[in-house]
Length: 253
Ligand SMILES: Nc1ncnc2c1ncn2[C@@H]1O[C@H](COP(=O)(O)OP(=O)(O)O)[C@@H](O)[C@H]1O
Ligand SMILES: [Mg+2]
Image (cartoon, rainbow, N blue to C red; front, side, top):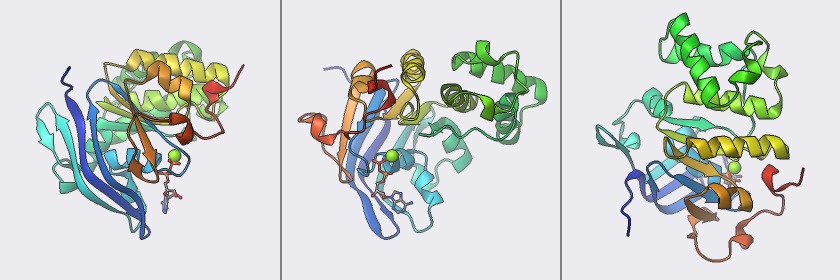
């Protein structure tokens, strides 16, 4: 059998939010360079599991994460929860794209350039060059190259989601966390995001939350089913773990 290099190793991971156990006993290996899909019903803990990987649950007061999380880097294995890696560096390496596009209320260009200058200390010329490359990688450049000064909120939903992806790619991550990236989009826009993610596979480790069966069938290398905060395993009846409300891709045009 093929041996896969892990990018993340989780052992006995649990998360408590406001005194409530949300995740429990999570044992998971997320392989490098592959697309791991996390599926399960609404409330199963999918988003919370993604947030374990970049310590984003800590944004909620009273959150507690237990167990072992290992991040395998070229320079060796680090334990994000033991402080082996600074939080800004962790969040840069493990970038996240949220379910609803969260563009900043500023120009298309500034949406990418501003975080680059504040987080990575890039000068204007460098930021512009990195922004152009990121927009090309997110397949948005041709649509916005003549209106980089326009307010990002004037873009369509699909374009905003690609802008958010470009903003994350500009930080040069190793891992991309994508939380139901097509759920707020119409069929064509969702299809565009799917094709884009297919192109990113291999170059990045993708961890994608989805409850779209066809979307995951086309893109996933590995599927993890969550049920009531526990890993249920990839085998068995997936239908029981899918919401009746499907993802954008499952909708007909
Ligand atoms: N900040 C929070 N504080 C308390 N409970 C939360 C918080 N975020 C999520 N939860 C609860 O944790 C459970 C799992 O949520 P979530 O990870 O968002 O599930 P999913 O993404 O699978 O829909 C839900 O019952 C939700 O209500
Ligand atoms: Mg969620």
